[in-house]
Image 1 (cartoon, rainbow over the protein chains, first blue to last red):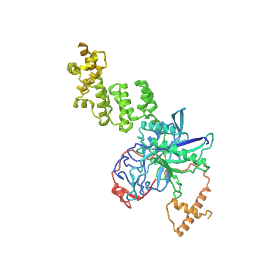
Image 2: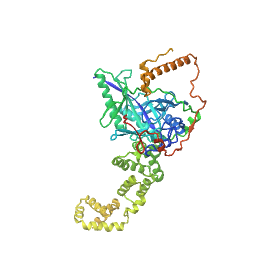
Image 3: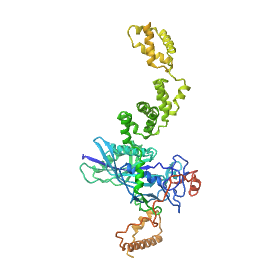
Image 4: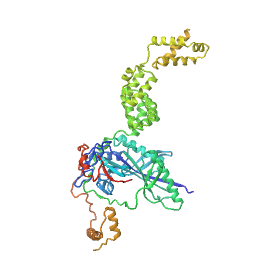
Length: 478
Length: 97
């Protein structure tokens, strides 16, 4: 068989974190009653007029600058015409001819080193409503709350060659945008959506093959599987001497296959024309500068600073900064307890364990950093031992409890009164003559069993090191 | 009339516009469209070399609103326009994709 190369470009839609929609004062809050955030503008009523949300322009510029794009200082909107029930205006306001950002690119890490993935353009547009399919009544129900929610579409160059490169690019983009605060970029909730344009060609060919566009990819796993499946499908077509048809396909992740989405009846002729209801956006040098000045610290800078300022291992710094949320918790907890390595350890070990166990992800962490800092202080002060701390942390992770109050309420303070502990130690020694005999016979490991009994007797609240020492003292006196 | 709109074109345009035209309306539309294209041809006779395309009829730019919620829940008003509805949704024929 011939050797084939996969060529992939992405169109990534990102819902911006504005409070209101792109062209009207309706809220963008997620999870409200259907159609409760609608008005004549976002439902396309005749005579209504859109007015551009300034924050949308600012976010689009921020993302453009962070991805090394040129800002198009004279940008305009256009109408993309099509009929679909989720699109009440029968057109989408988007940018075709003069998008806000052009010619950028970001670096990704690949097996063979750093690689730049070009960004062709970024444009601003409005989202469509949401269709909910009712199989019982055999109809669809439309909710226009999402209609008019601001999006940016980031169009890459066809620079990616594998699913791994695609995931690396998306991860990088997600982190940049999350750090900017421009979006939460959740694939599973649809605030970040990627359409994959893919073609294959023989290794060494200079022309691109015919590409298809794959939609409905809601997770990194689905993207990877869809890319592998589509690559094989196209190779199979070419190997059988046929031609790949340029079309839009929809991925079904449950069935692990894709199907062509549009029929011939739905001609893909959008008849774009300049949007007459909106005036040009003219961006001055000063405006660009002011957005530049306000850019927060991005991931790569943060990573560097963590290694220098906090002296934590690169691996840990990478994991922590891989989520803006976790990085925020790390910095705030560290600023309170001044123990970066301890904070890092709690995040790297217990937090990651609980994230995995509860099937959530780092972006959904909801405990207050101050509670983690307090827990570290409690251990430092010797108020609780390591085992108790782990138990308390689980409650911080799940219920965001105040550890000081929790420890007090549940009587979890360490038993540090050596007099009290010694009484317990003597009692255990008297109750376990066999262990004592073993110890005396030189089996020093027997002390481990006795310490275990001691921990049990104190309900895990004693310091095992202290217990060890006390047992040794008592046994040696005998 | 220099331009002629053939049946295939009018069929294509009516699909795009989601219109079902009677024979009579179709003939009339063909004539109207041909007239429009003639007018565009006329405009194309003008020399527009070096003329910046107009972005808007008004000489204005940068009309913005601040990112502040100004609208309340007016779903009842929105849903008044629904030909068929559920408690808070528009009912449309089953649409997939």
